Length: 281
Image (cartoon, rainbow, N blue to C red; front, side):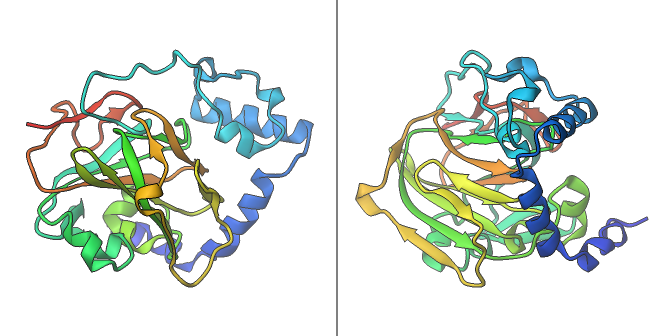
């Protein structure tokens, strides 16, 4: 079966309604039922709870509280590298941006302008730059951290579809990451600007950042922007910057210039928060 045919049912699903329903269920306080669901999830996805700051499934009053659990302080070591991996997950794709085109999967590209919500001036800062797309599976830790020190310039909520973002869907849905709902965070650093895009997906109840809190819901049909300028919060390398309530994908953009990605990173490689992402040549 072709990838496009395999994802056809996703076009027919009531994705918005399903996501809203799952968001309500995941935030429900249902006592023993909540604990049962969490334990089933841990067993099914082989979640390593020894890494969690709180390893007792019965102590979480909602599924969301469990899903966005924090790690023990010693669970991840930060590498001595200019740019760190911001999440646990798997590499979807990474490499050079060809002009304004980002490689999604075989046969599929999308533009930086589409990804950032139509802002041509912002997109132009990353012409011929570099990108990394990292997929977070249900079993992964779902907080997102900073790859380097950065001062927040702008946050943009971009409405969109809610397709799954798993590898099959990336191969089967054109422009997936630029058509799904997303939160675009632009930072300035000592080495230039960079962008972190939090991509929504089916049953991703919400996305949140540490400086704003929950960004969605509410879901709107219009792009929403928050400008911070030079007064934006400064976040340090390795600090938490946001989280997903249920899993998704992060896309990172870096500007043109010498950058060498971790040679161990290839499409499909498992990666961990804090390991070296790239060196500046």
